[in-house]
Length: 404
Image (cartoon, rainbow, N blue to C red; front, side):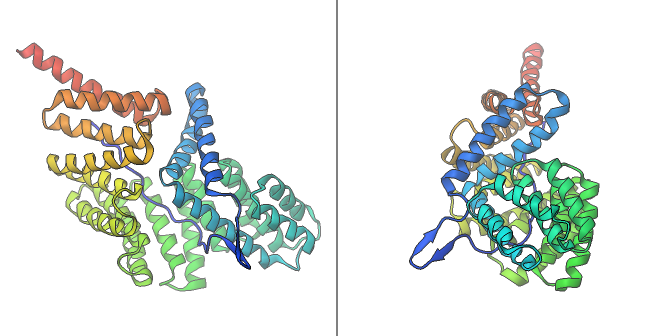
């Protein structure tokens, strides 16, 4: 039987603040939180419907897209803040090409980004690229902005293609290389992701030096990519270096440090050193509780991961405690029909099976399976895991009845 975990956390390019203040009033930057959440929910509904009807060739990309959207919905306020910070950073960075393209064109593109008009922004950046006299730096930045728009709209294949054109124009720019790595990672092109991350890290080491947060970002992302490729020892090496840097930069109680510890816990879990996994997960959970409070999705994720590690150690009662706490929190956050709630119930079914509580196990599995089929479709990997887990319990009960 199989536990369902949350994935390790990647780090995108660096951000700054969230909104502009002009005189005594606050100007909305991009879109509002409500608009952001509504857009994500529309994407989730559309992708869920398409996934149910999709052929095998289409399923993989749709599952990736749906997973990205659901991860953002799992912590919608944080995903909104990340979106706004990224938007602010992009608009600021466009100033680096002022004087290389007409001011009117540049200002129009910045304004389109500012108000969240991606379609117009994309068209304006294409105009920059199409100008025969546009310098290489301006063409690279305009192509990069188009790649970010495609990425935001879940057009990952287009985004990667655009990023690769950017790198042809500016092959040593660490931010461009890191973004190409992130998109490759999203598309499960892990060998390509490693190659881009390594180039980004080499560039950033030259630019910033060893102790800079951007360098730590690169090492974290390399750790995540090597985890996906199954080389957990390499992943741990990168994660440990990233964590050491995060501790020096941010201090012990920072959320980025908690993320680093959570990632290390995941890598040690995969290597089978569950005690080390527990140690890192516990440190991350203590930090997240102080940062976010008891009912936050990040805390529920930490408890879910600790439940998995204690299950692997045979500490079933501890596992149940953590899984139950995660389930209570996720029910309050998302309601009954959410994938995170289904994940928690699957995991509780797993532990109750191990304890011999087969009826309880079946109840949790059936509830989880019903949700997963409705939201993810019958052929999603997590749906298949839960269905197989349920069959195992039913077979166990049948075998026991036969022996009697």
